[in-house]
Image (cartoon, rainbow, N blue to C red; front, top):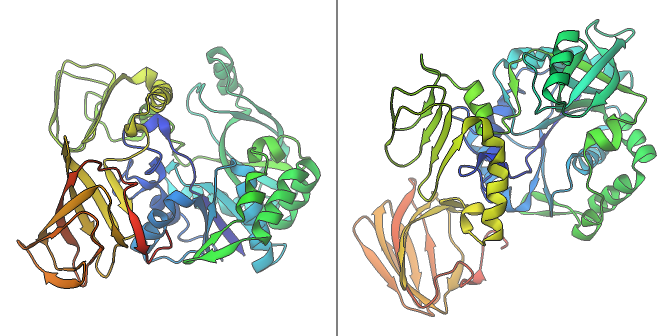
Length: 472
């Protein structure tokens, strides 16, 4: 049996302003119509005897992850909530312990980040199939990407001898090497002995747990305690917080792969990218004759080699060369394409300045739907709310603001103090300051409404929840 494990954590700060803490890149449709998480799940289709996937994510993203799985018509074997990210080794440990408990020690785990692009999914599945014999023989496999250029942004794997008894392409790992300088990267490419380290892994639960227990026992002990004290919360598996937070933070590579005697590598040619920057998205995107990759309402003239993305309005460029231009409703990024890795430093500056643009996306997703702030000023704020069919917001009140709801589409059931009303398009309701209220969509189509807030303080923390269907 093959248990896919999808790692959904991370914030993807190099892809700001699209990717933000509360809506990171793996949940965004950056390289196609589907989100990167959904594309990762679709690549599993056709794998022999694959089980329902285990997903490991930050608890802040749990409803987003669950909704994206639901949209695909899939079921998850488990959605595991980390109270805080501890890198990939603890996530792999939790998944291995859980899979061993459910399916036995010999179950094979396919560990995949949710934020990679693979343009040839058939080649990916073929590489997984090639590696399974070696995994069942007790090897810890990583997937190495055949390099196409002297890349300095990836770690490398030097290949060793052929693994005996397995597919002839499976190799021993001679050594892992860090990101090289340009000259060394050219040497690696010329030698033909090196592969890019993809960060994807295949192993049995028994082998990984044995090696982890020998090489990083503190991680294994903390994860065993965290899983042992876990509880089911609205269908999510919530790890015991104290135990997990005591776990050392380390990657699978550093904790195990670089130190084990059981490492092997499967070469893969699947048009792979870890999409770590806007430049990487430019590389995998469909370009015009001038080398421009654009998305949205974009108009370019006498321009070349640029990545331009418009989210909410027309973006026009004349004579631009090798730039990244990304527009959202609340921010615009303009950068030299070759310096797009430095966006991470820009986001750090935004955080230090206390700017909400580093954390909150213009569209904020909630378990009941989403909202977008479309205007704000002194003592007022205007939002557009979308409520999913059958969804209901918490029963709540506000100490510092009143609200006026105008129905734009669909039907709303509104509890306002001791009254309950059913409103449809063009009808409205006023919620005075301090009044208990609740909003529900009893219909079969999304409910859309405009919310006008007025008052002395309009922050999201001015919500007193009296009853909530989502355990917040």
